[in-house]
Length: 414
Image (cartoon, rainbow, N blue to C red; front, top):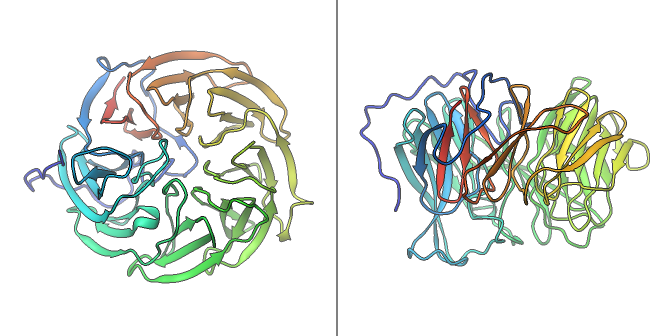
């Protein structure tokens, strides 16, 4: 069942960024950190639940929070059947943050018999918000800009279709007047920048590497190094640092045959931390002040065990935390790569790590939320089971958590 409109008496909050806003994948700084205090430590499907809202269709995009609204995407079967190749209505929706009730729900595109990996969806990229506009991306299936207050389309385009493998997954980023996303297809992988006001292409970077399998799903990260903006964009076999204004390459670091790269990079201590993808991922720390091919000169260290295929990492102080897809959590010295511990923490996990309120939050694929004490010694503070499949990453709203499961969105309170 598709969400219905509520009466238009709900007033949309100011477009200014609130302290509690969560405007894109992995939050305000795009690296999985929140300044929120007094977040919940314990919860279940029946306790510490402010509300639980059913979400039609299938989608693993993470929630975005702006003022009193929560935004999501989903892919709803047009036939009512949920088999993998059912025709889909690709939708964006707004929920009232206080109640979880629908405010608006709009169709942007339809997709005929799309295919996706069982751990993916046709609505996996997360919305990004800026100045009252929502930029909604469905990878090869289309991209659109919406008015956040009412869901009306500003522009929509399907001009950047490509041949995917396993569906789509990379979320977009904004830089000045550009909307930028990875399009790492089966062949001719690219990074594409659109004019955010019109949807017209402004530049495209053709990714070159020696990897035999070209497809990847990584969300880029914008950083600044010595006054210069860099767009860090990992793909199969290579991570490229681009000038976001025009897509020209600043530096590149090769990592051979790594492919299907998913984890979003993180940046701290002058280094980029990435995972190199399938089949056997490595965690790499790369100094970000190089020029040209830095493969032989700027690799600070690497870790060969327990690297993630899917979950994004997080840096807290001098420690880098990462979790393998099998639930093995590792803590390493971010400056040296020395591993302090690798301990079994959860079941299979795809969601990215969250650092908030002096704690580390982890959500596994079966719905188990584990809270860990940051530090060089492994210590679990709480284990909280929702009992529902969950691959989406956390969002923070006020002092609460938003957790998306296969059929619902939960607002978890202390």
